Amino acid sequence: MVTASIGIKPITILLLPFIGLLWAGRNASWPRKFATWAGTAILSFGVLYLSGIPYNLGTGWILAILDPTPGFTGYSPSGFLGMQVNRIGDAWVYPVVTSPKPCAPP
Image (cartoon, one colour):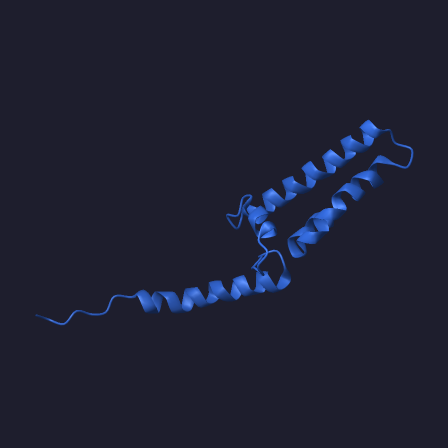
């Protein structure tokens, strides 16, 4: 759930260490706390990487998180809807705009 929320609101990445601490348990030792935190980070970033493959993002989402300007993300509902509208528009308009015009005879 937290991994999915990172795609919508990247600030939720700050919750990952706390999720790791919850998984470690109340009386966990420090090595166990670090291990579960690292496991949480690896699992979450792995899911984010795999979910970026269909959009050819790879790890490009890292640059989106670091960019201070408002940007587009295909993981949010509005971004996904906008991407679908864009694809539909490209399918209808782009072939018409780029179709070759008939040549006039010389």
